[in-house]
Length: 539
Image (tube, rainbow, N blue to C red; front, side):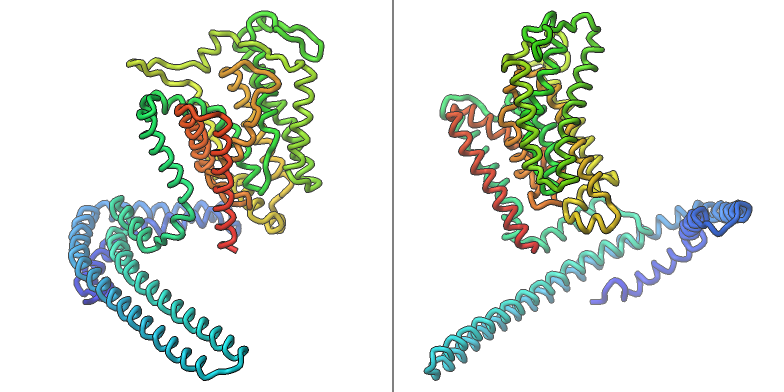
């Protein structure tokens, strides 16, 4: 059967459509490109540029008029042509698939025959040898011959898969050409699905998703076991919203540390940053006179300041202080090449010492009930279901982080520095300022998260204990590689939810808190091990 490019009727359709589009839509596209090129041409004077653009715009009006006149006919012919292409594609794709399947059968039969021949010849040769060295050499050569035969079979199978993939792809590309480049959602989905099927490898799928599959099975087991243990229905809307609420503030810490992991670093000061911001927020938003002194000063009373001013003061101070300490650690890492493990460990100790000394370890007390409910409360949805308000700022934080990582030059620089700092420096990227920017961005996220943390619990110097481990683990589980340069914000967000869901499930089933650390530890080592295996495979 003829291919799409050889089919005579399709050639006729293309000829008709090309004639219709020549002085219309195609000319309009070309003129628009020429206008844009002219605007960027520094060799043209202002007058020459204006004349050229005026000329092109006049021609564009004519082309647009032709396009409008031919639109109905173009649509009718392209629709008819696509229907014809779809009708012949069925037989064409089926024929190519049959040919490919036959070639795979032949290749497998040839492989079996080749293996038998290699084994037979090798056995005869080994039987005739007496020297141990010669026998070892013969066995090695047999092994090499079998390896080559297997590689040849794999190459042939891959070639046949490419034939099938190309036949389907040719059909979609032909339809797009007939529509003058316009795509159809259903065809795009079908093409992506076919590409996934043709490129699917079980080993790679398990390597990429094995941990997630294991976690899903664990959650399914928890959902089944919970009613049997009399704990109730785990998979309910109320429980899901509670998990998301618990994940909300943790999301900020994971989004902050994710940038540092992306450049093959880490941050051990997250928990202390949380305490720092939460203590400041708790003191400022406490109703009336504070219950503690700070560095033997006070006790303070901020109630005279309007609530809006107090909120702004608390948020700004939390962010400024977290950014200040993050910048402190970032400077030593960026300038002196000290690993973030050391610089953030130092920052952690400094903050903890200052907080313990300043507050004597005492909780700062609860914040004003009205504002706590306004920001950290819940909306009543009816039916005994309430929606946590803290989920909203977490979603906003994810959106902002995603935009920075994916749509800004700074985000691209982050990936470049994380992948290869030396290559990034050679290409003109400032490794110092990119690293400092990542630390500062982390400080902003920590500041916002610690501000919101005060709305969940009474703040003290011990608030946030161990949060850095959960944040780091969430990022690793979410696929942000410790080897640098690989990861997505969506992965970090999913990792936070997975970790909080794990903790909630274990608590729901009344599993001892100490044993919960065992489960977390196993997940972390499994995630890092899989990441290391993938990294070794890439190398």
